Image 1 (cartoon, rainbow, N blue to C red):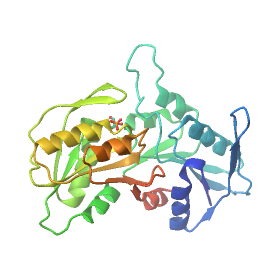
Image 2: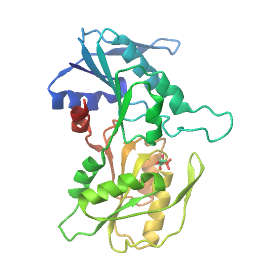
Image 3: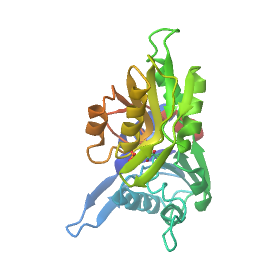
Length: 282
Ligand code: R5P
């Protein structure tokens, strides 16, 4: 079996290949002068391949389709999309809109598809292939456990919106620490409000845990509320560190002590690996 690393997931694919002790294919890719992409998998990759490619950009999505096509001689193709871009466009919010997650999922031909903490599991139904969402919450929990200075250390996990409740609760359960959530209303792509709420966080270290940090607006507004409630240190953690534009700067300017994320996207904050989770699933 070969692991096929997509351009956006080379580090994670390498870690999965190491965890599975299987071969890592070479890939060649570049852009033509007109902007079109070229992709080639020169190795003879055999019967079973696992393509690993996150799709944070349109170009990464094109590369995923090209990888699948390049491996068409394989009898069995598993596709791992650690971060599936467009998953937040999971249904029609307004008349006439494209259900973008559905449009993209439909074009992916494979035997099995794996996502990791996809924004809404309803998108799994859009894949023709057998699609499974893997849960990185225990990996996040295990990492956060190393932050506790001692057994009596008071740590609290906060979900910054209702969509993150299951993830945050699951990590808190793993750690055996307190958990709460706040209610968010999205006003635009980069503006949210967080409903005022009394939180039992005075003097505690708090981790705000979300599936995605994109502009950072959700974390910044939640951190403000936590400060008002007397929290001590506030950290941000997520599965998918999209970190669009100057999100990281906004987080640190808001007093966030540190950002911890899974390696579904290859960023400097991606310190929590999902490689073993993927290896086990494949
Ligand atoms: C949306 O519901 C997601 O779970 C995240 O809360 C959202 O993507 C975060 O976006 P931003 O960082 O731009 O506030």
